[in-house]
Image (cartoon, rainbow, N blue to C red; front, side, top):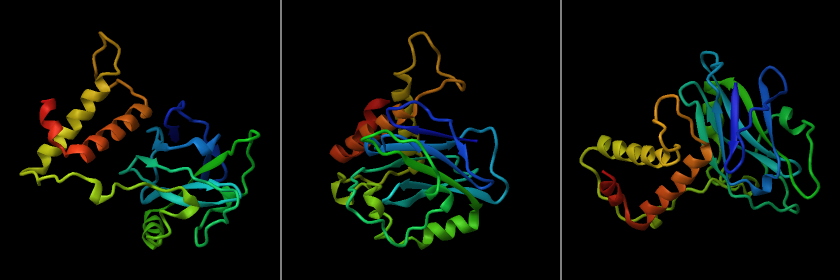
Length: 222
């Protein structure tokens, strides 16, 4: 039902079913993780009114809720900053299902195997959990920090006359970037596939250009 892809690694479909409402992926060498993408495979949808919270559990350290998936939001990319210390105590107030904290998994000496957990829950319960997280706790839990773009670091961007035009240009920029990875002589169509790592690299490049000089570069890709 679920797939997982850590940037720079092969796609993972080795989902481990813990019980009827919990499943997990093992993330080896978690200290090297920067981006992780979680998504529905499209084979089995969520039951009506249900979705899944996405948890990242670091054994002996703690956990944090990364976000959620639903039929309306079948995929998500999370950017993480791995800055763990074995001397740090688990953060308080972070709820982790016992199905993840009690799971047994393999480990390699010198490396940490973390857990990416998915908990099937009603959408109302998911919304309440995400809304109740303190703003100062969410970015600091375990020092696994979603790194937002500081407003002060963005170059001034004039408000477009039509937001749909800007959205179309961004989509075209992504399409052109991905098309560059398609083998020569191959047509890009609905059945074409691309690594999530390619999309993660496009995102980093795109944000870097916006920070450096706004969105003017989109005009030059026509």
